Length: 245
Image (cartoon, rainbow, N blue to C red; front, side, top):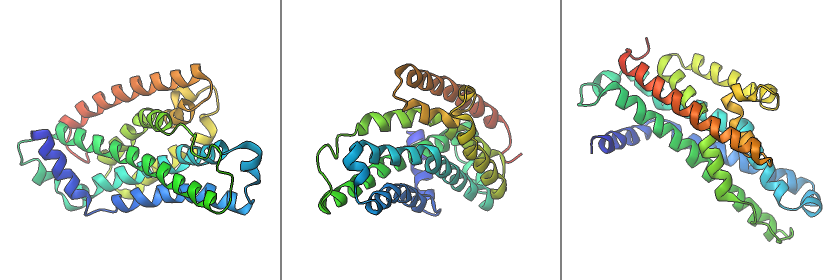
């Protein structure tokens, strides 16, 4: 019951931030990208390669750029309000530990990233429906494995969420948090496709969606191990350390 009440309190506090706005804008920007692209070429690519190319473009943009950036923004906004208003002191007067507060905010940040991914796919589906209504071929338009894709992305993004949440918890300056997030996001293009991807959790979502089963399974296994270990260590560390110090 205590955990549930803490979750409710944190949920109510998010309405004072821009998290919910970003939850809509980032998926919308991702969904508009393939829609504009295929409207521009008149559906030639879809006719030649099928609808999978539409969905793959959207998912690639999401895992490569928009999801990492949303993770940065949502984690920063969830924690920054506490830094700015010093509401840590108020929260910690309640019968909750700092470790509990950290963990609830972490799970909330993860849930927002997963929810944003689901919304992105729904908005993409709306874009596909619009193209079909405009006369694009309807065959296999919705044959993409939505549930599998979202499940893989949700699991493989966890280490990235943990890292960014820890950064947001540790630093009080928003620019420092955003700079670290931007650098790690840009690093995806250099590391994710190299032999060193195993050391770079930001590339795990892309690799988890790889058509090569062995690579996908390896990315998922690493996501679980690395993410779980990071969550345990950071919860223990920040549970005994003063916030922002």
